[in-house]
Length: 116
Image 1 (cartoon, rainbow, N blue to C red):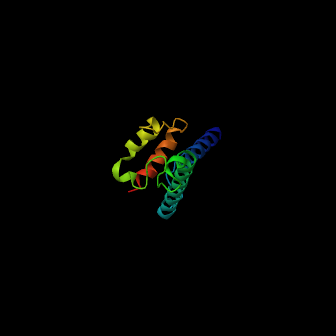
Image 2: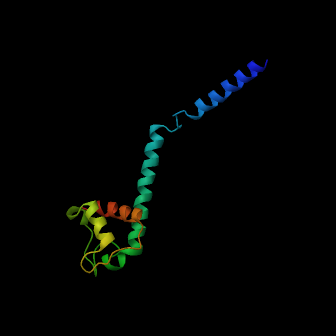
Image 3: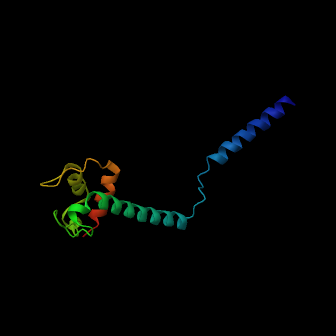
């Protein structure tokens, strides 16, 4: 009797382990695409918020320029990594944006690189 309980307990544990390791996340490909679209929209909104709070005073609320140059087509002239470098280290009269976290710099650079 003891062996039967032990064996059934072991089987139950193995089944629970196998069920927990299942790779089926329950998401269909449509769910994954929808989640990706929402993430992209959130990243754009976040990048715009970062821009408004840190860049718009010099580069204009609509990227049109002002004290700083226009950024409306910055992605046509600079790569994402070049834009990130300017944000982090500054250039000419532009100071380094050291108050931004690395992920914020990357989001902002990615968003600006799309402006062509």
